[in-house]
Length: 60
Ligand SMILES: [Zn+2]
Image 1 (cartoon, rainbow, N blue to C red):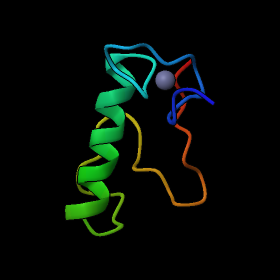
Image 2 (cartoon, helix red, strand yellow; image 1 turned 90 degrees about the horizontal axis):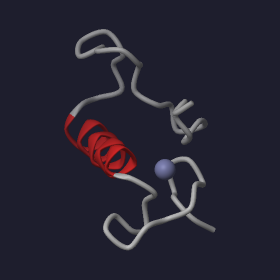
Image 3 (cartoon, rainbow, N blue to C red; image 1 turned 180 degrees about the vertical axis):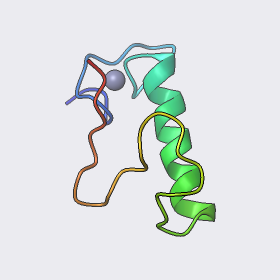
Image 4 (cartoon, rainbow, N blue to C red; image 1 turned 90 degrees about the vertical axis):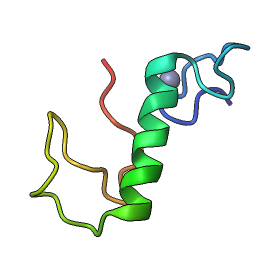
């Protein structure tokens, strides 16, 4: 087991994540899930919020 976002190898600086990006992504997911209702239309930047059935964003 490694990064909960992309299953990459975690690093001490960002554990359990593999990188700052994944840490930010997780935080973003947390904030989105916490404060925003499941609406995909409002704060769409580049990728839509993740549905509960698809926890892994595309990082490649
Ligand atoms: Zn990662």
